[in-house]
Image (cartoon, rainbow, N blue to C red):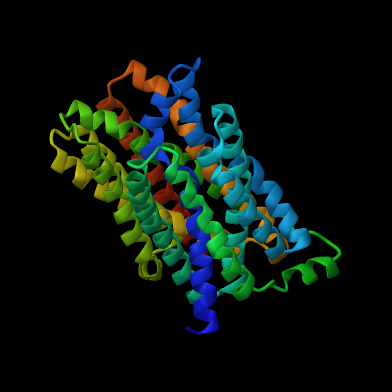
Length: 387
């Protein structure tokens, strides 16, 4: 393997740590709920164990972005990987549920640092067509990693609910690779020599808010789909897991194809297509009367979001000034995980008032509105280019 190949593999493996952070322990939640059922609000705190990393990733990311622009990428990355292993494995050896909750918050801090650094390094290391291709591969790799790690988490849960927490020690396996194969970009020297700080392009705010909305809507599926499937008569948890995995699989297929898609479409039109395909997926979920129909719906939803994640990342990488690249990508990471954290907070009260098919249909309508908003922006952009 060439040095470039080793560098790419290392970036992909470190990227997979972000996917591990939230979903790896989800199969262990029912057993954890039983273990701590005697505690006041035990079930709620167990659910927070799953979601609290997303909140702390969102809080940490913008700070991490500023720090890496000032002090460099790699030393902070190495520190975050060590912190990741210590905090991530907390659920294996900590007895107190509140201590486990704190360890998950610290895990979020580690991921907020590492994810911001990894996306920034991709922008530092690659340019042009190579960056476009690698951005899609990275998202696809993260999606496939999600499927593998959730499956592994389920297998390890059969031993004990604590065992899946050991998966987080993988960061220590990847750490020597990060030390050996990644190098510090030369961006920092330019920042120090430069007397002024360039401004963040205003379109960045459109992109980061769009990312938050995208994740709020998409996370309706992992939060509410299991209950929808139970209502359709699907009792086996394995089948519910497969349905969620189908959306992840198709997001990987879409992300892997991103470079070819981008060769034919503009950034705006990819958002139009992605939101429209996601809308079809959510509408089919609302209409579904069988398990097979839900699987078809998940393939649409996954394919739609799979092309939009690398589209956002690449667009931000392209327009972020190198001197403040970390800061800008920190903002993107913050809004990404804020969307994941806010989704159940926004949608769970709605689920108590309305039927789940109604919520899926409402999401499909909102996605359609977003799709045609980006279509209008596409034509406005084309018109400006002609003028």
